[in-house]
Image (spheres, helix red, strand yellow):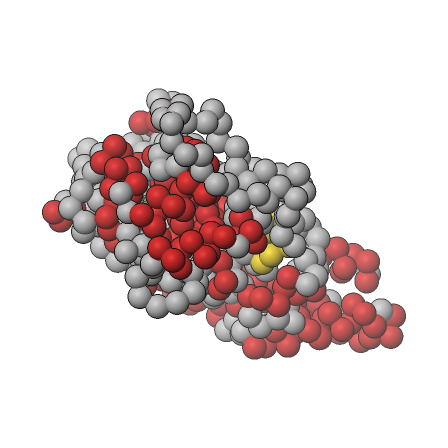
Length: 453
Ligand code: HEC
Ligand code: HEC
């Protein structure tokens, strides 16, 4: 029994931590830290820029031999910005860039909960994470100067104060223009591959440069955005040191923003603390009691897991909701599954299919009949913070979402076979909502206003 339990309880070892930062000491299996190897170069975006041979060579900080020790992604240090107050001065940026530690490729560990998705981590082998690149991406993410009229930044539609999404039905871009889709969340992207509701961007890098030139989002051109950024001394300096001779290019802007987005990971929720203690709670009381004598170490882990779960409690309603969510009857984990509670696949659950001209979603990209009306499964983590819901922002509350599933979605010829009428009792609907609320975890603290002057 103890052996079985040990394997079930991979997450227990770090539940003693009540904050994000406590898990770094002992990362448990199955979450292998994402190793980048010690010979990883700072960046290799060859071929080198050939445009201006006469330019003085950029000074790339040498960090080939230094790979940082394992770091816990989501810790405030990565997104707190360059130390100080007010606009970032050239001197502050220079001092920051001169510290080799800021260029060492990070060997990252994901926070408890999301950690189970370490094998899903995407993109960092091709675009190494460093503190300097995260920081540069942070600045760009919050900088309205990337838009045509200086009014819109990524954060306008993916706002930390609105669950990294926006409480409007559709994204609102420059001059108040609106598209037909709801702004999805921009956190936990590190465990996600194809981006957008229809997955049309193959990577975060590819996604990040899209909004800049989208006429109804940031309304700019890539050329103008590059020019603007290159004319801001503080940015120019950072690009030159981080990316070498290439300096400011649209692809490097994408790389920096994508790196920042990968650093936005959300920490343990009551749901995660409960999952960690659950294997013990479902044991027979006798077995749990004998564990104390048979395996003191494991029993100590149980006690730690229990203390952490008690400090971040799930209500009994949320626990019932969890069981329903995972059970065949609720059927939610047919799609909302894995560390980020999202299968990264596309499904037609019927949303908008009863309108005159339905958005066909994934079909527009794949042209495969089966993809008509299919959209990418969104995460359930922190979902309570990012209303309204669905690709068209048509559902205002989690109660409305549950009602959608309860009635079996909206019938249409491409409806997923996994969507069926649930006939839930009122208290079961409430339990599902409570469970989803208990998936709200900790967010990294992010500096929003310090940008290059
Ligand atoms: C005007 C509002 C708006 C702005 C500005 C904007 N976005 Fe978005 N974003 C959206 C909408 C709407 C979607 C969904 C579009 C779709 O799927 O077709 C989206 C999708 C995304 C996604 C995909 C998430 C997923 O789950 O697939 C990411 C990541 C993202 N945006 C990041 C950014 C970044 C980075 C910037 C700045 C460069 C940015 N956005 C600027 C509204 C906006
Ligand atoms: C067949 C796969 C599938 C099943 C089963 C499923 N979902 Fe979904 N879920 C999706 C997809 C796909 C979307 C987005 C659909 C869209 O926008 O058109 C979604 C959207 C959501 C959203 C909105 C999230 C957001 O950010 O907009 C919530 C909440 C949600 N589902 C909860 C649940 C619950 C609760 C269950 C079980 C009762 C469930 N889902 C079952 C695939 C599924």
